[in-house]
Image 1 (cartoon, rainbow, N blue to C red):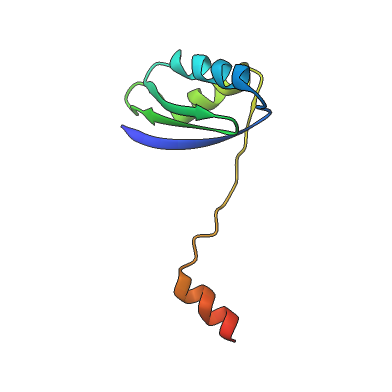
Image 2 (image 1 turned 135 degrees about the vertical axis):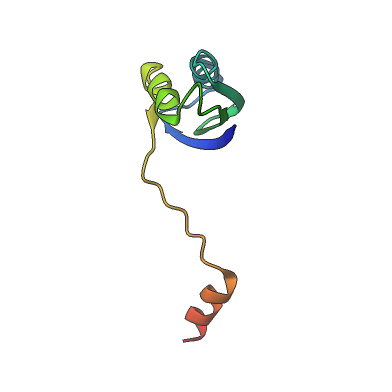
Length: 85
């Protein structure tokens, strides 16, 4: 099982959270760990499900998966050396 965090736009209330949770729970090979406004954390069994299927379920529920988001994971040492330069 792989843990995946999915960023989702278009969610604004508890009903949205419930709709996404229900959509993801219906996908074979996907176990929902948590859903909150703006994101979902799921476990995916690669033999039975996929991230693409989970994303399609979110889309079918009327929400948008945010793709291509890159988090800045630079080390503190690198950040400090840049600020000292």
